[in-house]
Image (cartoon, rainbow, N blue to C red; front, side, top):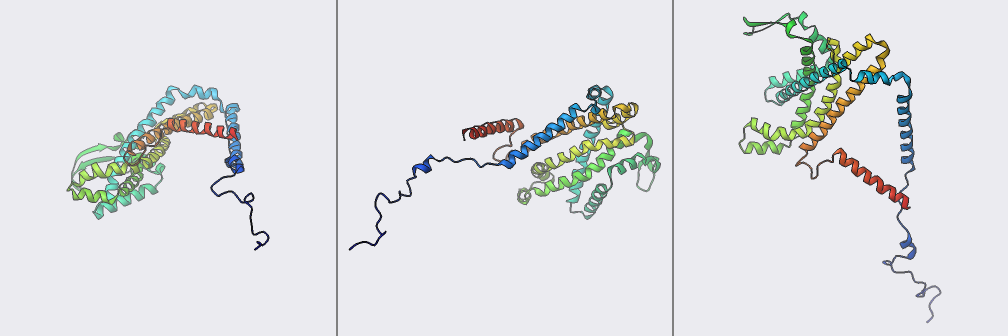
Length: 327
């Protein structure tokens, strides 16, 4: 019986088995996906960055010779030292005050919770410059301070004008403001600790103080550290406001020198900018290593250091260039 036309397929015309790739497919190579938009954006950014740097270097208005003259002047370094002192004192006192306020907000006492909430609400609402100016003129309201029985006789009396020096006013004002923000950072860090940790510590019969100091707070530091370091960077920049309470910090010294040498205002501002960039960069480096330290046990591998990131980036770039050249 004859087969209908087209029903039979010869062996030579039969398609190759599915599991046997053809020579054409075997000869093809996988090509990386072209991304012209990325290269165009990179070129535009590099051109703009080059123009910005060229403008900084070539514009005589910046007076880079005067910038080099002022950068290490003793008067500028003295102001920088004052900025560092105010920052360190305010950071330590602000963090300690923030811890106490956070514990008060988490307390079972309604009075402590209410007082802590009102303090945080008020200090986060009032501008820092207002707080500093209010403290600077505090002696007009209370000329003397005393210690004694409440609503009764005073045992010790102090002259407020002698105690409230410019440094003390600046540190107290920044510390009060910093404590309000640090309290919310610390409270958020404590609440981020898993509730099972509290229950396990209570089941072991550990005292509350020991639970907080040895179990809860070390784990909360993983969340507290990056947020508080951001606050610390803001604190470094906020020290520029102490100039308004007659304390000659870095910014105040530059302002004073700018009034004496009006032709050097721009170089002096550049000097202040450079020193603030250096200070905040140092704080950021410290933040990275503190975060890396507290990441132990929380991640399988520690975050790479900047040097390790640089090496990995260079290795990846060389591999990409080789792939592009081979196409």
